[in-house]
Image (tube, rainbow, N blue to C red; front, side):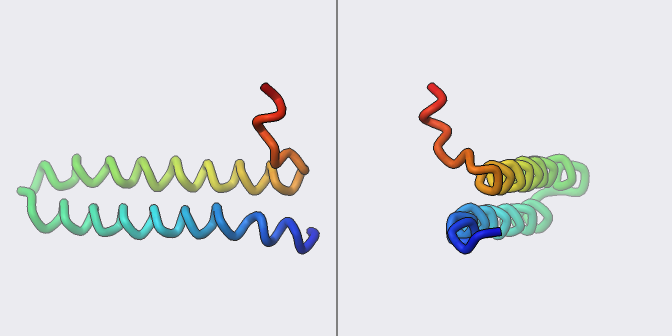
Amino acid sequence: MKREHYIKIIAPVFITLLLFATQVVYIGVFMHLFSSPWKYVLAMIPLFFIGVSLNNLFERIKEIRSGEEDDISKY
């Protein structure tokens, strides 16, 4: 992989890590504040966002590696 690809991957990885960290904090808050049955239900929401953001990150990395960085040009 070219050096320019690594540079273009840094921003999506950084944003995904930030989102992951905030969602982990939300899970911790839900586990601490709510009663037993509700905390597990509410913890599923941040877990869903973590999964979606990881999927989005992998799709973006595939786009960068294949050279399709400019999605706007398709429209």
